[in-house]
Structure formats: C-alpha cells, structure tokens
Image (cartoon, rainbow, N blue to C red):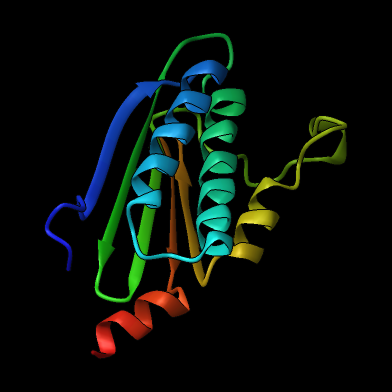
Length: 142
C-alpha cells in the first residue's frame, strides 16, 4: 500500500446541502489518491452523496443535525458509512410522502454497490456501503 495515501477518511459536518456537497468533493479528492478506475470512483462518490443528501433532506425535519462520513480502504475493498442521529426512515412511507423529484436514492445506492445495509430507528440511520473494485483485487494479488 502506498504510505502517502490515507487509508481512512472521516468527517462530521452539519446536515446541510452545501456542507454535504463540500464533503462530497473532499471524499472525491481522497478517492482520487487511490488506485481505482474512474467508474468505481464515480459510483462511490454518487452513492455516498445520495446517502448524505438523504440525511440533509430527511433526517432532521424542522431542526439542525449532523452527518458523519467514514470511508476506509482495506485490502481489496472500499467501505463507506454515512450516519446521522435523526428521526430514522419510517417503516411505511406512502407515495404521497415522497418528493416528486426523489425517492430513488437508496435504490440507486443498492444498484452501484457490492453490498449495502441500512440500519434505522428513532435514534438515527446508518447506511453502510462496500465496493470491491477490480483494480484493488488486482493490486492485492501481487
């Protein structure tokens, strides 16, 4: 492993649209230092931003809160976890509750990750995502 590359990235920011957009750019900078193909970097950036944007839009209705991003490169995998301490995802959400331009974030995340888990409840939500890009599998074989 290149010792100049940080193997982990972590930040806590207010759950606001501008803050999560800035955090997305910082994450992309961290990813750009890793031996990943552009498509993997794009998938990780997009999925992570979706999870963070969900926090900014849904987790803290009528109040302010925080979003925590933790990313880790270990062996052949990139793991990213987005957590908040907001209201959680309701067990049942009617179509009327979904904004007309949204409601597909978790589906998109699931589609571009190798593994995704969502834990949610009254004390917040944790979205954990894992990617195993081919470039990392090749690098660890040598």
